[in-house]
Image (cartoon, rainbow, N blue to C red):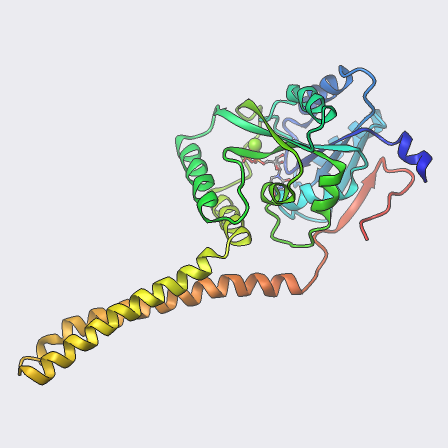
Length: 324
Ligand code: UDP
Ligand code: MG
């Protein structure tokens, strides 16, 4: 109904939460104050509880009961950050959607500036990190290496030093929602859509409380997801390595033949043989592994399981249509 649309929120803020009981109330207050300070803005804040094991969900319920502009979507278990955000995008009704983390490492104070840019025509306004306070040197260096590698390999240029903190126009949100893949590397998917994308620089704060949910292992997985879903180069790398190994093997064959035919010292050549066998075995395993990674993803995708399951929705009335 057109009337509904006119009354819907102009801005949706999507906040994924996983075990954030320590800070969620404080975060909400800060977010609400920033949004209320923008005159005439109709907003909603959408908290996605990503299967928290602590008191996050009850706290969210209380926030929702106190303010009808708060909506809560509780997933049936922990599905991971990128999927929680996708669930939020599914449920967001705004003409523009902001993604922000519950820990306020990305300052909500930037949202009015993002809105301003959006109103003057930008379709995506993404936060570009100037500094990362309170993060280990290792995280900073690995993150920066990752973004640079990613851009060498990827077919879609992805802005360096950005996270998921961004504002997106409805057109972009709909485009992202239309992508059914389950390896969701959102910042890449948004970059892929095109439209008018503008950076906005900011300082990344330290967490206000609680601790990071991205362990070393999760970060690595995330990096591999990003690389493999935006580049076919690793697959090609297997071919290059195979070619290189074959060329070396050919030289080895010629060498062995020459020794066999023109000299009688061909038995000691076992060292070379040994090395060649090991090398070829290594290259073959590596290539198989790369192919396996992609094949696994194809398998995962063709199952067509839903991305996530919802166990509770609060504050959505009338019940909103899920994406077809
Ligand atoms: N998060 C989530 N599901 C997860 C892990 C994290 O919804 O499985 C949320 C988390 O609550 C936070 C955001 O994603 O709002 C970013 O996580 P975190 O701050 O731990 O990551 P970091 O900032 O350290 O990269
Ligand atoms: Mg964080």
